Image 1: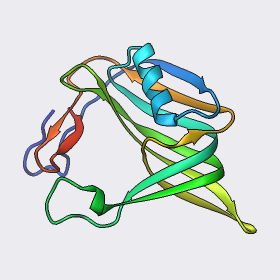
Image 2 (image 1 turned 180 degrees about the vertical axis):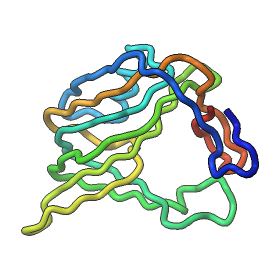
Image 3 (image 1 turned 135 degrees about the horizontal axis):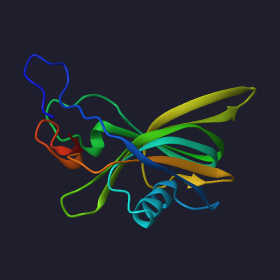
Length: 164
């Protein structure tokens, strides 16, 4: 549903959860690719990543350095931080929606903790290719009923986003 101009929201929807899909991921594989494989295998058109836990061997955190004066956001507007060391997934969340071409769009963010000296530090950002699983990685996706949710082009940000 599109909101009126007085609303603070761009869109809103309410869907029933049809099922919950959980899967374990092999060690040493790309986390985003594994999620994509499960989404395709389970024919998930619309979903919410509700949980992720386990260890990582390597993580790539992508974050905005600033908001650009004009969109779309470019690589110069982002910081990519790559760490190759043991990390624990602290959180994993995101959305899955189908694009016009029938392919799934997966937009996920994650945080992971690691040991720095005598401290545990936590980092977070957008999940991008290059984040490699360690051991015991499990992801849960709530599959939503079909409807009007899809991944489409947002004119404001000039990028793909979820649409209701």
